[in-house]
Image 1 (cartoon, rainbow, N blue to C red):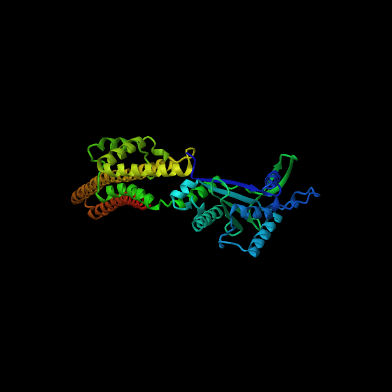
Image 2: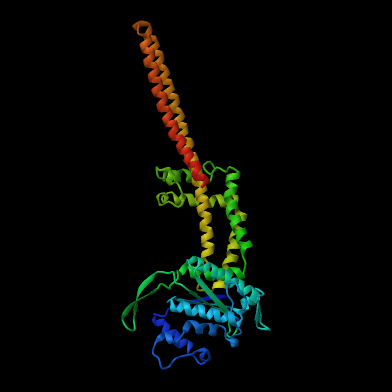
Length: 417
């Protein structure tokens, strides 16, 4: 299955060997009428490639009209201004980024954006898609204040496509040393390569803006959150649930001593994680069988939609894997939160026993001292010593309490996070 949306990206720099290759590309028979070459000169820059690429994009035979971030259609004066801006960018040694977004016509027709009978497309919608995509790209690359772009929609091939050309009038990107393989010499030029993540995001945004799946994906997210919310709202205790009680204990026994690390993403809980995952599966199977079936059905629907958009060779399965992984992580943290609560309750129980024992010992000592007063004649002195010892016991008890309270406050803070 061929993808519904294809993004091809390249760049041209006046100092690179790709510059000459692009000149050859522009010097094809079907483009020569737009090219002015000074054949008597051997200077590369005599071929004004940035300027003439605008003519190529605006070719009447391709039915393309130039548009920009703010204008749907440029008149001759505005086209000339754009050309001069591209010339200035070239003189300032800016790279020119060239993106071609190509569409499967049948897929566009299914989205009611293309009429195969009249060979026309909803240009208003397409311009909107390109504008939002370019805004995302420039923001990701830090060029939203420095770059300009122009684009054109072409119908002259089997697949409707959009050409987009971008330059910086005054380049802001870092300069780097580049080896020219043809001359084996080094020279400086502005970094032109964009991040792979940026290009992936561009492609995804084009497809998602045309095929709006917001409602479907919101439903998936609600199903994910609902399973965790149900456990909290209904106060379901997996530590005492018959099917998970033993697994709960096994997991707790394998957790690190440092309770701050009781988070699903921490490597220090690796030994406990298989038990936690098994508890998750049992919980979902017991309390949410219908919702989980619905969730997986909707995820499969999204996978099929993405397969159609991006093709067989794409990682269209990743969306489903990511969402199921998110569910496992959310549930894992909910289970670990319950484990922290159980652990705190056990520690508080021991703590209360210690308080009671210390108070008992303190009062026993005080009674013993009172009895001795009657025979030693040192009543006042012994009473004073008893009070001091009682205060010391209570102070130690208070410090233990404060430490437990601090742990409690930390747990509450992490729960809110």
